[in-house]
Image 1 (cartoon, protein in one colour):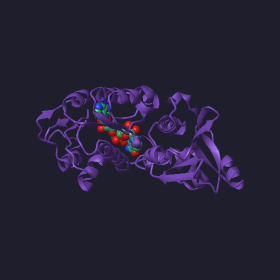
Image 2 (cartoon, rainbow, N blue to C red):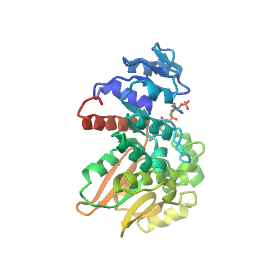
Image 3 (spheres, rainbow, N blue to C red):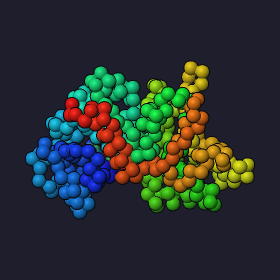
Image 4 (tube, rainbow, N blue to C red):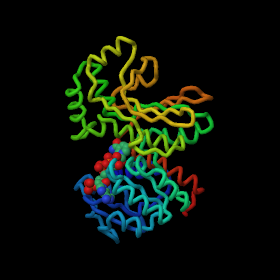
Length: 328
Ligand SMILES: NC(=O)c1ccc[n+]([C@@H]2O[C@H](COP(=O)([O-])OP(=O)(O)OC[C@H]3O[C@@H](n4cnc5c(N)ncnc54)[C@H](OP(=O)(O)O)[C@@H]3O)[C@@H](O)[C@H]2O)c1
């Protein structure tokens, strides 16, 4: 995702910037207050898998030192997701926010586990937090829901939030058995070697928690989301649903009821004429049910380096807009 981001910055130059540091434990770390050359970084990492053959005044800083000493005014956190501890990303974000630096992250862990703590801390330090890439990668559902549907009265949100499980279900509908569809998803690089986070629904549940917190003002953690995965679904069930004019989808759902909020991820029988039914393969989609507009559906990619890198760019553009184009 970091490379996708740098490629977009290099090729599209969406705003003036200086990339003052990159920190990665395996690929190396460089810092230069004058700005590193995005093209040289991309070429070097593609040729050698590392960046530290490039010249730079500061080298070898791990993440904490990079946050403290690089002089950046925005920190972009893209380390691997850990949905149990939220680390190391939560520590990185907390550190940057405490220093008064605006942050952008694509990492679900910190926000599915510590949303309120991090956003309260950010508010107390007048820090902006961008998180568009955590749900549907670059498909802009968070900004859309939070800004454009703010006054429409969101009653419920339902979505296909995990591309791997949607791919498996689509392949099963086309005749594959579950195990066959899963290993095909692994061969194509959609599913991890350990696919439990996807097929047991925790990846989707993390996104449901983020949607609840960011769009509906809730204080949910991943563990508050009721969850059932797709491993128990037999092909016969998919065929029976089809005969009844439905399609089985793994649906993440948020429903406002009375004063409360119900949050779940589970296989659902979606009528064929509903927009979510036509979302096939690794695509993702989200349907907002609103008081004024009725249903509004956004669909698009839910993963990918460039797609998620684009989410970071859109967050950086929002930060620039919010800060009036000025450095803090
Ligand atoms: N790829 C997608 O489609 C997508 C979509 C939405 C959200 N995301 C999220 O975006 C993040 C990045 O995804 P990715 O696909 O780029 O993952 P990735 O290929 O695993 O990249 C993560 C990078 O972070 C580095 N890293 C690990 N620990 C670190 C630390 N302590 N400090 C600094 N860097 C550290 C890793 O270095 P090593 O090589 O040493 O491990 C690796 O280069 C993840 O949280 C992911 O869940 C990804």
